[in-house]
Length: 334
Ligand code: UFG
Image (cartoon, rainbow, N blue to C red; front, side, top):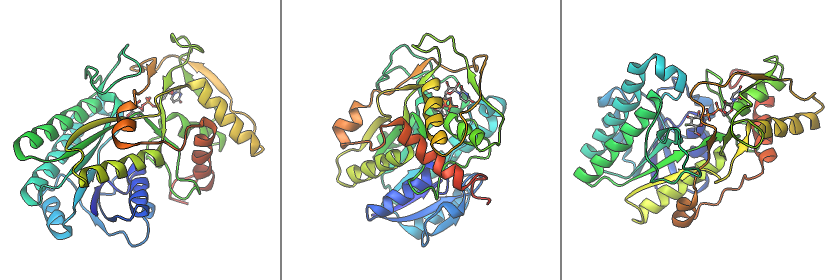
């Protein structure tokens, strides 16, 4: 199949482009490079450098490249920033996706895979979280993803647009080999920050709260390796091509969680093997908006799409992130 991957030069997009090609698909990337990197793309993948907010470019790209399916990754993703600049988030994430939907139904009406997030659930006691849990996003970021999910469903009802929505839990790690990886302009994610701290770019790791109602007092998250997540997209595309799914929503996680302390222990285990000292840790106040436990009920994607994550060992997951950051301490810059 020929896929148009919107936001394909970003962290999850670039890993997905690679896995799609490995599965024999042809790929064209549409990306404005606002946070993505052309260097993250394999040689020979065409890049349309354009913005989803430019509806005419979106339609022109769909008409020129005639994809059999579209995957939509392009979005702003920072929870804190979304609360300070809601207009930017609603415009980029909601209007951008609307232009894409409109472009698809006006041209080829091909299936769409959409990257959504566990942030659509908000805080819940219903853990592990099933897909049919109530949806109460607590940030503008989560709200933009939920609004887009709802728009996609409306386009399905009105125009027959087939879709698969994937709700990601905590995405982490990097392709083994360390040549592509997480490279956001603003660093907030736990494993990435821990690796950069080990490289001496920060003095210490803050643990945001150790008085949560969890076994070791720190927050628990479901850490899904980016390459496994990329494979979930390949499964989704193949299922839609086979006509198996035309309106499906799946959580993508391991189905079990690790605490902040367990993650930092795994980072220590990896870096001390490379002769570095363990990280200095400091207990800091809770970070506003952090639920104690966010873990996926991941049965649906396993049962329906045959999803089988390969990276289930936390130390192995961290090792792939560490290899990327060690080889690229300043992302793609040097
Ligand atoms: N944390 C620390 N110290 C740090 C950074 C993070 O203790 O320096 C803690 C956080 O408080 C949280 C955990 O580590 O308890 C994970 O935090 P991340 O920032 O890595 O990830 P989040 O769980 O906040 O959010 C991520 C994505 C969201 C997505 C969510 C789904 O950024 O978009 O996972 O589970 F919705």
